[in-house]
Image (cartoon, rainbow, N blue to C red):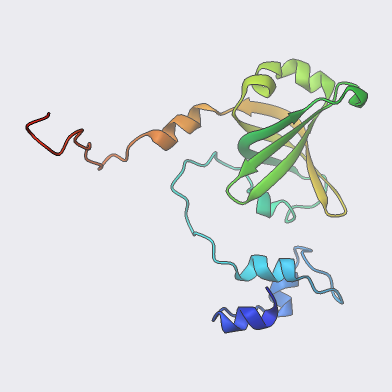
Length: 171
């Protein structure tokens, strides 16, 4: 989607200062349509699903400085333990905005083995490490928060139960 398409769609094109700011998403002299699209793409202001406290979303990982201690949470979509990695495990978590790459060292894996193997949804606290366009979280604490997934299926408190059959004769 080019700038003209954005204008034709009735969306506003942000100023360069709005894109660059202090967060390092774009650098002077370089134009990135990817950054432009992320700024103008409408996103829901509030999600209805439960959010673990104090966690950054995947699209916010470029905001803190390299080496900052952060927390991320998401569904585990990939676990890798390559034979050549000397016991290092690579996890990929997904939230509503994207994916987060996580590195789990062998010693930490031994401590949080059950959560790493069986967790469907994890909260990872660790150090942010950025190398070019790739951002990883080096895990320090791993929490299994899979129990929060059950809240997604729970009916809203004001919801009325549905009738199994609309016909009173068959009920």
